[in-house]
Image (cartoon, rainbow, N blue to C red; front, top):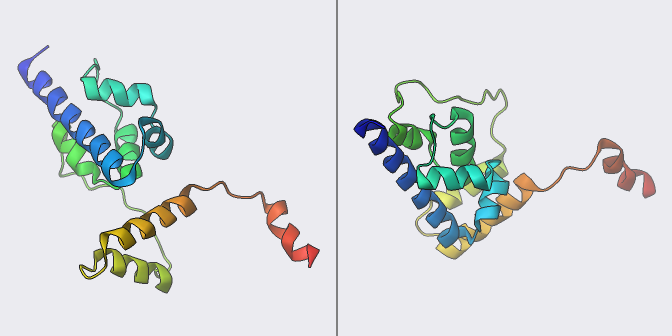
Length: 146
């Protein structure tokens, strides 16, 4: 293994370890919860932490890991020594942001809002983002019952 490759592994392992530590400290997430929320298996995350990989991690998994934890994938790409000049994938949206969502975002960046309230907002959003969706037939059931 070359010295550069070893340095990249150490840098990426440090990035992943810090991300996991932050998820444990700020969100009280276990390794299993991180895996569930990011879609990256615990075995893969553990290999990343140990630097135990022969070929580079898949970019899609790195992006999923980062997005699940609210991190910028460019930071992970930098640790891996990947080209950071390539623009990150963007989600095309034609609709304007919902005013309620915009209000929540303003509260999350407002220094006058307590950390406890920001934590509550984030946890509520995470719950809503990851809850199972009802099949179309079940959504209409409540409308017909009344």
